[in-house]
Length: 96
Image (cartoon, rainbow, N blue to C red; front, side, top):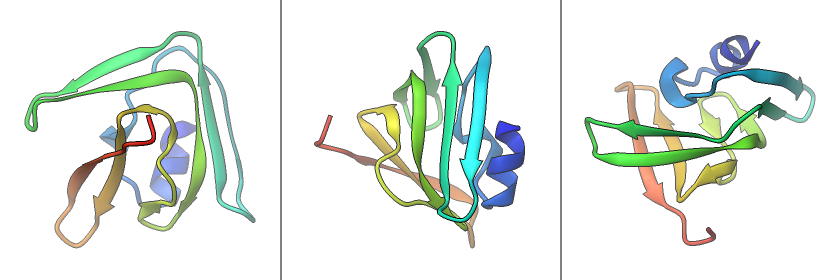
């Protein structure tokens, strides 16, 4: 289901490294989506040398090709997709 949501909104499939998912959902009318996993997960994006932490609950509003806010449940990063060239850009988020 998480992969279906990413595909539906045109987001890269490798953007969320989650395991042991217990719940996935969305409200398509508003673009709100959430993913609940059993344990916190950390992933190192080797190409850009960035460590990202995924909390047990990840939620945000999404629309075609973008995550609207700084995705709650991701530590220190907001992730933005650049569809024309297929690259992912990371920007520091000072709110965490």
